[in-house]
Image (cartoon, rainbow, N blue to C red; front, side):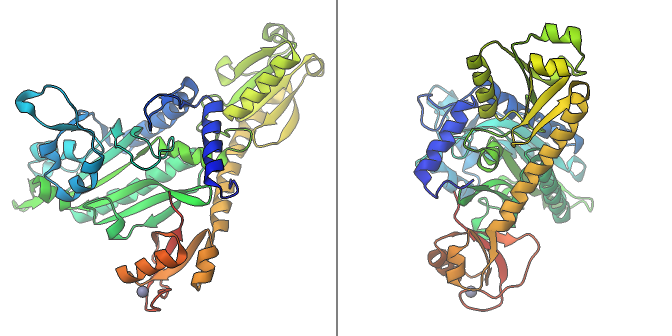
Length: 458
Ligand SMILES: [Zn+2]
């Protein structure tokens, strides 16, 4: 949803949705850090379980590396270290030989010196591992919960090593598919782009990046990085190939986590609060009984639902009923089942969907109705984001159009000089090239170019 393109109002709305739904506690007294409340952490955990089983299915093994990273490891790749050292948190305290250490901002410097020890021959490849951890980066810019935090977590990062360039490229394709699977759970249709090399993760030779909508901008939300042999050379990760020759491994990395939830808030939440897609929901349905006890109802009718398929709220007064409804909406629980004495007499129940749909159904058919409704809601939310993204992307022939468009699709020749003009004349960022390359003349110099997306970006 777009809130009058007013970032202050949007920030207020953002924090209110997060706080009122009991997703997070934002009053923890370190800027850029927050507390996960049980309701929020249950959602995060659901997504975490989803990626655990997805990665297990694709034979990527879970691991855990220490939080503290020796500076000497980080210095092995200068381009990485130069882009992270300003944001690093150095740890104080006694370590042997007064070793300088810092908190992990990403996994590379801790992992790759170990890869060097583990990989000897082509039989040790491919190496495919991941960890789900917190990472730490100091933020001088303004922070925004779930989008820009000092402690980023939980988030996963996958790191792989391969014998050939082709295998590494296949891994990138798998990474894209796995991201799409997770976005499907979130009922989000993301924008996928290829990043120009200059904008990639430090040391990468290419990347596919996912973007999600946020107010009138887009936000980076997961990337699959092709590291080529840059890191292998910096960390000296070599193996003896099947022709008995030494070669450097080909590497990829990808990661995301809590920021996934920012897409759910930005794309699905409304004035009343969160709207949680059924596949992500920790509570899919609430049963709100009005002047009625569950025990009493059970004596008269069997709903056919297991106790773990809904959250039960028994209300006696108007105030209690009001609070139950309000809390339900703030938390974005997909559906509320309401039954009072009148409905019970008619053996009917109201189904009130968080997307606005209302139904009166036979209590004996609730189970079927819930299943159908939850499936439909998941599709409806996904479709809504697909249409919204399509609506915002506009192919533009000139700067006037590109300036007005939310996400402009224009041509770019690839030169740095033209990218500078494009950014200043559109007052937007270059997000990336279309996933399938499209020929389009450069909007600036009119030479042959490729189609790129240009948008405001967080
Ligand atoms: Zn140009």
